[in-house]
Length: 243
Image (spheres, helix red, strand yellow):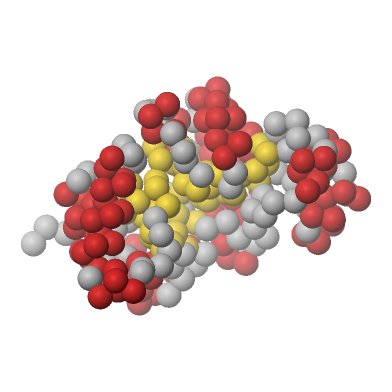
């Protein structure tokens, strides 16, 4: 039997106990050997794209330079008492330097077109995958690689008949011209991996920190695993032939 390739290793933001959506976290993912590094993206009032997971009213009140003042940013999160808010341009520059791919997890629909425009402007299309909010990207920008976020829980009917879930997500991914499906680990079984691959769809799985679960997903042939335990997954890659 032909051995399937090892999945891409995707570093979840905040990997290795670093602060999420910081330059430290992004650089740590690279240092640990990740193929892909995730960042969460929102937009300030003046259209600046920044790394931030949760919404804040301050985003709609201030331009970036104001927002990044210590007295204001610290009200968004205690993290920003010591850390500056990071611009998307900063991590795109680093990604180009190290030739590492990015998972751009877009948190709000209003940021979609500005994100795509910036990625194109900085010539990062080949490095970027998009997850999160993704409406109409595949139709308006077919050169972008978009991974569809699928439902994180199975319905009672789907728990009994998993094939219904498989058909639903694969049909949506195929019809929407997506690169692949971004799945919560609780919903990913070998059946969906096989069905998705038959339709030309990649399978990404998040957020997997348990080594045993990593190994079962590797064996099933998924294309990418997102984890905060990047060193664990890179360790499994070194011993891939024995898994």
